[in-house]
Length: 234
Image (cartoon, rainbow, N blue to C red):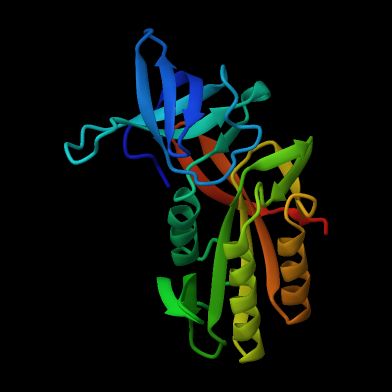
């Protein structure tokens, strides 16, 4: 998935009201950027961080910049836009670039299921059970090389695991897919100290037959692509 316009570097001044960020461009101008991330963004919203913004000239948008990346030492990046994983994964599913899903020929995003929920992807194909795939964007890392989810308490995430368990019980394929939007991590675990309830829901879902798949990302200021599987350490 390529960004629609060329990203520009900036320095983060502050993030506030969850969805807003004051930023300083390299020419000294201060701008307000939209932050498409409702999470805590632990470790990613410290003043002074080097970030990358996507400009736009859409007259329907109040803000002319969107915050897309955080740049780390060593040329590593974290993608902070939580809408990116589904866009990148849709392209990956449609081109059969996700391991274990070659038999699925139909990719249906945002389908209603369960009790008032929507599944990120419903995959279908001849001779295989329907696959219900829930996607989570992973951006937290508190240890070198280790990505963690979640970065804050998420009752909604626990509900999604319960819905997946019901799909598995009904004979469907149910998959919890974690897309790590960091280039500095090679393994994944749950942040059970942050949300013990989510960890418990995950354990119950795994026991019910819900699969876990964790994928990495290739991230540059040009775009984000789905990478290969990462080790899951739970």
